[in-house]
Length: 276
Image (cartoon, rainbow, N blue to C red; front, side):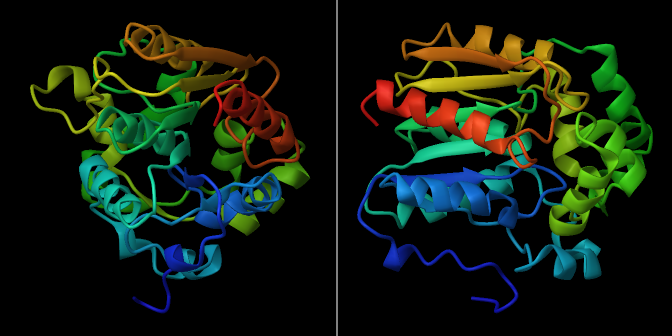
């Protein structure tokens, strides 16, 4: 294993139901560290592997912005599916933003026993396109040359679209701790999913599966509540249990900012009610 890569350490997991945490664009896997500690205290065996090629720290990732350039949704999903194969049993998968989309794909592929999708990125068939989402994504999607590149949000864009409901000082601190360059290919793939016959942003919504919780955020400018709600309505047509929750006053940073415990407790309650 590359020594720059954040370790997974599957072989030393403590006993307990495995939980795999999947981050989305622009966040380092270390953003899950508070969740790792809490889930471990609650008797789970959590891991938060980074995306393929992701360095061990956010600072190192920012120093090598092209390390992840060109990665697409399928490559990232396959990466997590391979890691899951090394676990002693099927895990619960929790994902945020594009990590939420990957979590939905993983449970649709039979790789997970349950899924929690926090403001998940759009999958094929989700037609919601709120103005706030267009405003946030347009500066990237209007530059096709970024498709094969990576990009890190500057602090102003981060504060406006990602951490818009926290004080600017907190938004800047979150950027310093967790912001990393991410491949832009997934953003283009999701944006064009409904125009592609075989899109990598496709989720199997018909499979018999374990319970899924979708959580939206009422002031999210990156994946607006309407987009998350549309995902829930599609997933609810599945034979499996699907639940919906919304945090009306939170933005896209809600799983990692100072209010992270609210959604973590909501997640724990969901898992407990379903015997997980």
